[in-house]
Length: 87
Image (cartoon, rainbow, N blue to C red; front, top):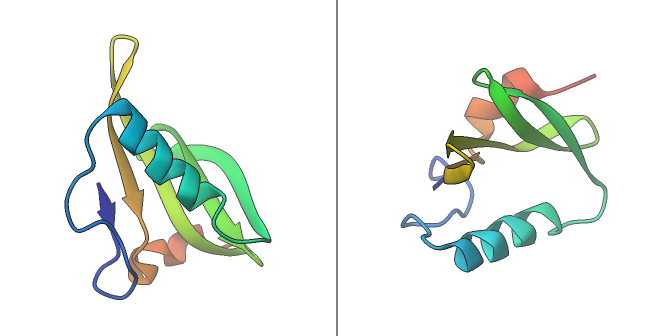
C-alpha cells in the first residue's frame, strides 16, 4: 500500500502478489538518480528511508508473519515525511 496524500502519485489500490509488489518497490527504489536508501527503524521495525539531498521522499515499512512479508507500507506524502529529513 502506498500513500501520496493526494500530493504525489501513488498506487490507488493495494498491490497484491510477490511479483507485482517486487516490481512496484523496485520501480520506487530505482526511480531517480541521486536517491539514497538507508535502512532505519520504521515504526519500531526495520524499514527503508529514501532521500534526495537529505530530504525524505519515501519511507518503506513491512509487516512480517513467520518468515513471510505480509504487507509493504510506503509513505510518499511530503507532509508525513518531514520528520525523516536530514540536514
